[in-house]
Image (cartoon, rainbow, N blue to C red; front, top):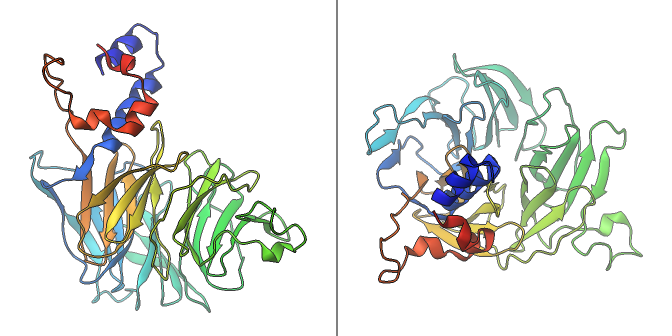
Length: 376
C-alpha cells in the first residue's frame, strides 16, 4: 500500500492504480459483518435489492409477500456496532401494496425521488419516494418477471418477446438503445429499440459451429431456462446464468461466447436470479447466488475465489455498493446480510520470522499485482 501511495505522490503511477488495488483488496477480504445488521422487516423471502447510484446510501428490497422496504445504509451513530434501519415500507396494510410477490425493485437512475417495482400481480408501479404513493401503474396481460431502466437513457419504450417467459432484462450501460433479454426458452436476445424488427441477434453458445445449417431459431445460449443477466460495467461483456448450472460470458458487440469456464454454477431457481459484478477492480469479480451461499468468481478467467456463507436458505439476490465494496444479499430466510471488507491486517515487523496474513496470499490478488508493488 505504501508503495502505491509513494508512486502516486511522485507521479510515477496513475491515481486509478491505487484505487483499483485497494478496491481489489477489499473485495477479496469480504466477510459477514457481525457488527452490522439490516433491520428485519420482511416476513417472507427477499427477491430483489437495489442501491441508488446517486449517493449509494439508500437501498430498496422487495419480498415474496409483496412488501417493499427502504433502508438507510449510513452509520449515523458512528458506533462500530449498528443496524441499518428501515426508513419506511410499503407493507401489507398499504392501500397500493403489490398483491403478489415483488420480483424487481429499481431506483430511478438519476434521482432518489422515484423508484419502480414489478410483481407477479402483473403490474409495474412507479413510486414517489417522498410520499410513498404510486405516481403511475402499468398493467400487463402476463406476469412481470423482471424490469430494468437504462442507466444512460430514460425515454425508451420497448415491446419484445420470446416464445416463453422473459425472466431477466438489462439495458446496456454503454449503448442507450441496446437491451438484453433472457428467457425460459433458453435464448438470450439483444435488441435495438430504434429498429422496426427490434432483435439484433440471438446468442449461440456454440458460436454457430453446430448450427450453421440451422436457422437462428435453433440458437440457444443455455441448455435450460436463462434466468440471470448482468453486463460488465463497461458494457463490453455480458454474463448470463441458466438452469443448466452454467454461467457464460459473451462479447456484447459480436455476440461471441468467450468460452470462459466457471465450472458448475448451481441454479435451481424457477424465476429471475439477481447477481452483480464489481466495479474498478483488477481483476473484476462476479457475485453469484449459489444455493445458500454467494460464489465469487473472477469474470475473465472463471476462477472460483471464495464462497460467502451466512444465510440459512436459498439466496435470491445480491447487490454491491461500489463506493465501499460492500455486498448485500437477500434470501428465502427473510434476512438481508451485509458483507463488509475486512480491516487491513498489519504487516509483521520481521517477515522472515512470521508469515504475512493469509488474505495477502489470495491467488487472484497475486495474479493482479506483483509483490514489488506492495513494497513501501
